[in-house]
Amino acid sequence: DIQMTQSPSSVSASVGDRVTITCRASQGVRNWFAWYQQKPGKAPRLLIYGASTLESGVPSRFSGSGSGTDFTLTISSLQPEDFATYYCQQAYSFPLTFGQGTRLDIK
Amino acid sequence: QIALKESGPTLVKPRQTLTLTCTLSGFSLTTTGAGVGWIRQAPGKALECLALIYWDGDLRSSPSLSNRLTVTKDTSKNQVVLTMTEMDPVDTATYYCANIRGGAAFDVWGQGTMVTVSS
Image (tube, rainbow over all chains, first blue to last red; front, side, top):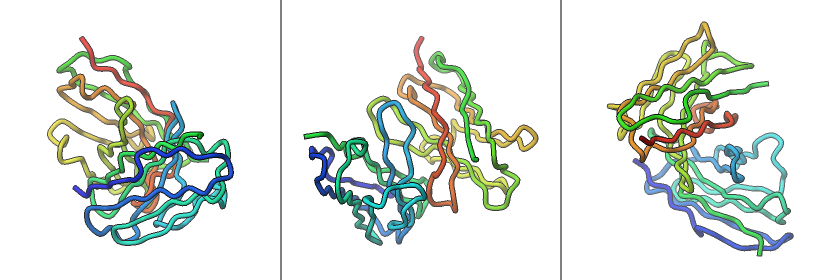
């Protein structure tokens, strides 16, 4: 299985801050890579697919980059609704695997 | 508008078999390229992909669960059914089904159904 490691595990930030979350795959996944946002008690929401393509309806303050083994999710200016847990996921090989999550809290 | 909805028991006893149904609306698993995945999330834990089933019947199951897991599709009812045998308390989780687009990302998710394994 391809292991996905996110960092940090948690981060505290303020509204308006720029936040970056990283994800590293244990082997190359090319751009078969996605980011999700999950709020408590809710299903995950797809934010980014293909490593850098913004899902329809997702605000442009979210962006993704990377290829191969190292990926980044950036939120350019945090909004109150962005405080949530974020997961990365590879789709290069089955089983599809997710990172352990990064919890984004209000400072 | 694509939607998925999970249904099934909320409580199962250890060693029992769990059967969950995912009912699809707005799309069909008879459409070329269509696929549905089952993903679970234990309380406070990360997401785990259990299985994927595609329009052509291609099935991928998690190797760690493949001896316990069966996924089938009923195109007449537009449903996908997950069956997991020998349930254990560690299988307590919220179980989601989701549409997988292009085999790459889960773009539409069901609301999830919480399953507790306890005697």
